[in-house]
Length: 116
Length: 113
Image: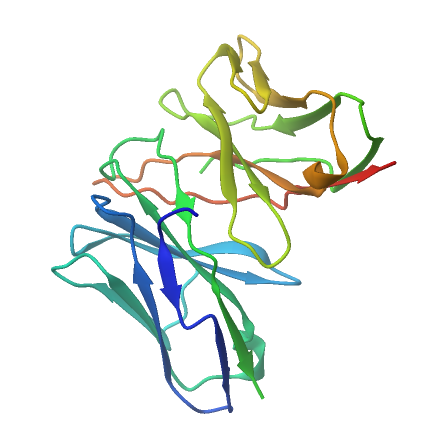
């Protein structure tokens, strides 16, 4: 058990809908990362938050947004869903600040999103 | 960003030593090299991390040559349960902070009896 909690584990929805994925980092971790993993794209970095502030942005679509709350949990909002958004979405947390490169990421078990 | 290149797949048998090499030609001075293991439908799990020379823990060893343009993950005496995807990750610092930690394509290791 990594200590990172993601809910829900599975999510089935229809095209055009909006969903929210939730992540609770390990106790004491300030950094939260979101990744998308699909069969043909591998593990894609989406966005990173550190202590409530956005710190790095990857290949995140404009239809997607995220935030980190004062209690450090994070939410990833996906809107106007398309079939191609079906994927495993992982959240990871880290104990170090965003400047260090020797970060060790602890991943949750992911949310499997299926868009029908 | 330091791009990584790994073999797409490798096959081995139980009890053998497996070495997976990762190329990262444009690694930056401050970058560390980290390896993760991922089983199907699970999040990646940290295996080992290093900066230079050799690092060893209870799971694996990591060999990094002096030029740091590549690294080799060594798994001693693999078992069926080591069948997984292994990712080499090189950290990147963005101007102003933030880590755009990008995973490569990973190496699918298959261990057979």
